[in-house]
Length: 300
Ligand code: HEM
Ligand SMILES: [Ca+2]
Ligand SMILES: [Ca+2]
Image (tube, rainbow, N blue to C red; front, top):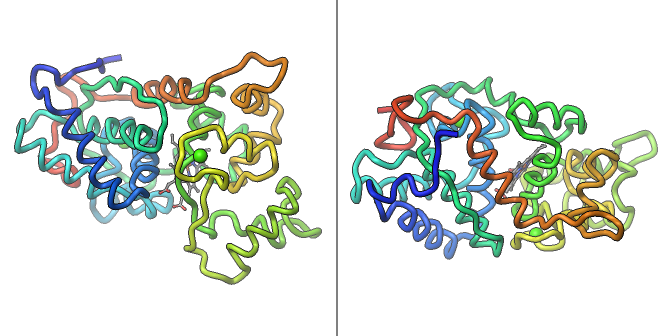
């Protein structure tokens, strides 16, 4: 693939521990950085590969595109980078810092640890319109599958990785349209009726669209299978999430994560690491491609 475990073991042996301690200390003062960093790595990898293009600032950069406006955790990456430049100048890429920080974020929320292959190099281009490669919350399962397969990820990777919504929050504006006049008969019928009223109370019509609600209403701070149980119970928050249950082709995978009788079980936390390694290798730059940025928000 071009990346490998322990790429920095000789050139910067403290690299992984510096990232881990930085993530831990920020997490202790603000736990919301864990879902923030996981989502940021996904948004990086789906646009020009995992090359830290998402971190570049500028008037027409990816950061200015709608799905990236609510990304969180840039200051964590900058903090880790500052420490790494002091310890091993010019060695550790921003793309690797982000990949490691995403893994450490899952560990902080009680997920299973996986080894992150490293050796990514940083890109020099970031274009807002390319964020179109990212899936949207109204996308059908066919479109979600297509956007993942375009990046070399299969249907199992899709269901597994969207399971990242077991932590973190969404703003009301991304799902409140499901609660009121979704059809002429009212709310989206795939939402459990008892849950509709709870969500209406959290996100009233004409209320503050930037208010935040847990994507996994059962355990928003814990990396577990509760997100998949919710889908089974009509308690998915995003339209795209609930469709993983309403569509037969992805429902079986959700059922396998839930260990439902008669199906070959799949262990979510173990599969998550495997799919993250695949996602983390999307179109990576290695060797002499790209550069090692000195500051993660600007090219050298
Ligand atoms: C069909 C694919 C996906 C769609 C449509 C989607 C959409 C969204 C949306 C709309 C939000 C709310 C953003 C906000 O309100 O700020 C969100 C949050 C989040 N997404 Fe996804 N997502 C998808 C896949 C993924 C994947 C593959 C991962 C990670 C592996 C991921 C990780 C997260 C996390 C952790 C959050 C919470 C962010 C926070 O609390 O700051 N998502 N996603
Ligand atoms: Ca990228
Ligand atoms: Ca959870």
